[in-house]
Length: 228
Image 1 (cartoon, one colour):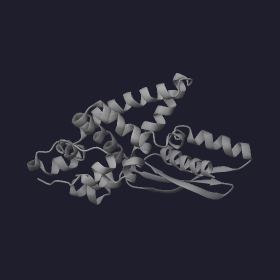
Image 2 (cartoon, rainbow, N blue to C red):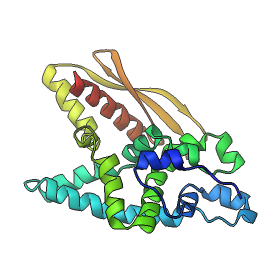
Image 3 (cartoon, helix red, strand yellow):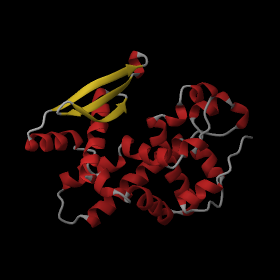
Image 4 (cartoon, rainbow, N blue to C red):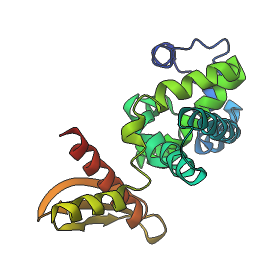
């Protein structure tokens, strides 16, 4: 049976697993399970399901306590920015979660280890693994460590396009989104869009819908503006 060495990952997580079999499951894509039935390893889908529920609960609780004056609508938008596919995949990409992924040969050849949707899944499946191995306190520490470390910038994602529109209008600037590329079959296209302000390219975003690609490009541009 194929096994990963998780010692470096455990340092990143600041958590030592009692049973690393939880991590084996958390990093097993269904394509690997289907291609390697003799391995008898289940995919991460159930762990992802559990992690998704824990994530929503913990983030909701933390935002409720952290922002006592925000309305229900404001808290909902903020939560949506924090738990969206883009935010979660950014984190796992930065920390190399994809390096531990068990994929089928075909999925690996087509870039599965860097695919945004899969990297998002891994944030939640690892959360599920930590909960099963160490309980809710360790699960909450994981979320705090990785998701709340840069809440100011992460919170801008949900309204990125409208916030950028307001900013450029207030400055009298011209804002445009331009399609850079659209690749892949019709049912699974990947779009890349660039933000232009006064005809000068700012940032690019890639996504499986035009809206998502534009949203990511807008978010990256906002972060750059905020850092100036």
